[in-house]
Length: 314
Ligand code: UDP
Ligand code: MG
Image 1 (cartoon, rainbow, N blue to C red):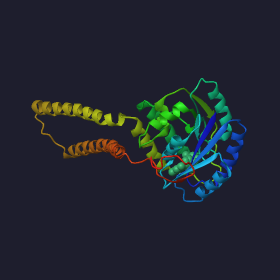
Image 2: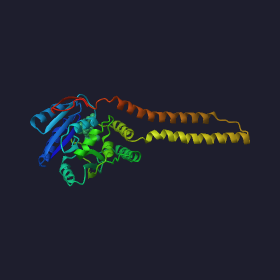
Image 3: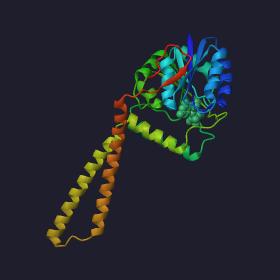
Image 4: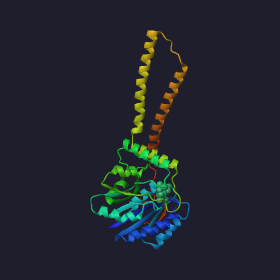
């Protein structure tokens, strides 16, 4: 029995030695074979050099180096495509996914009742309040409008059986949103709650704007509901317009009032113009995603690695 850990790394030279030390200790205590697959996502610091050192000294370590920064989703995909273990987990390099949970996760999987054990932060201590609020709103909305089950506070950190990994690899879409993919493929998942842990060293790669865009991407990738907003708006406005026409015609016939008020006309025109542009924008978002998807560009390009047999461009 073998466990593969996938660790996406982008500028993690401060956190990596701590992560490696801790994880190694946990894995050695677990009495099973294991491999650590570090994916260097085009780091600009000494991450790659550090990974090479680790790989030279430790046969359990392999690394995949991208030709540039492709993002965490691509790094995770590269890991999944090259993981050979019976059980596979993705972990952040900053210790926010505590390796100490791994033995417990394995124990739950070994009972055979579940296909994956996923972790969920029950607190968001140490995170800006406004960010937590937006995060909660995001989960509320996406669960209403998407058929993928996306759990609030869920991390990408989960230990999965081979069958689940195969399903993830088979989802070859370019616009990847892993929280949605995990939820969409199904399988029996056990949720393991834990308290939020702060990053040990280095800095987060996510600012508010990046997270906001990530959330919008998540919605567009896993829901068609925004598209139907346009048709609902359209229908609603048609009904309103019909009533308004009746009202004006009857008022003219009965009371002989001339139609006055250019101000209201301008307001209505700008309102409807705004709604139309808004709806076109939503459609544009989907068209843009479709455009990227049909180009079938590779998810990532590997420039160096110590894994012999792998697809360098996938
Ligand atoms: N990461 C990556 N590519 C990126 C950004 C981040 O591989 O473009 C990795 C990063 O090295 C870390 C994990 O993704 O291991 C999570 O990133 P981070 O801790 O910055 O995110 P946060 O925990 O703050 O959401
Ligand atoms: Mg982190």
